[in-house]
Image (spheres, rainbow, N blue to C red):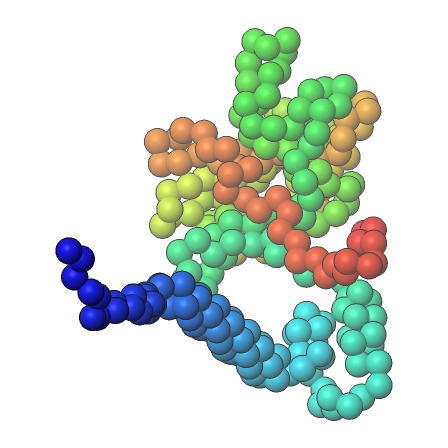
Length: 264
């Protein structure tokens, strides 16, 4: 016998409750990082621009650096027309500043000087003017340094000291003279050849002071580059490379990117 059904069971649909994903959180983190990066970048750029503007004004605007190069001392206006062009023209019109003396111990007295305000003699028919260059087919070495000099041009003391000796470069042959200067403090002796002296033994000279004029070498050495020979020796009479002590050329040049360097 069947039992009648008195209850009906109805299945209700279940609502699934899903946990929120992490995707929105990651997106927010990326957005925050991007905004922070942009903020930092803008802040740095503003700081750099502000610093540049301050420095620009501090050195005198567009004219400041150019006037410093040209050593212009008169008053000027930031609103002066063509100030940059005028400063550039003035700078290019000035001669190069040459420094031929060196004060190694910073006592205010020059210690070394280029004797002719010229460079070292290059290679010619009689060899090179460099220290240690070969002589007599390599049988001996050049004991000094030859500095190019025009005939009759001023010759200056390469070191400070006392004139202790004057003589002849070749025992009186050809009349080519020599001058020796001794520095009692550094114990360095300088010998110059091919100089017609204007000083006397016992004179005290300062490096860079004129001591005579360059002589003509063409009679003894036809075709050679005219020069003055300089030998330096220390307290033990050891030779010193003069080119390592005496300034050869120390030039401060004013150059412009859009203007070729002027020839001297």
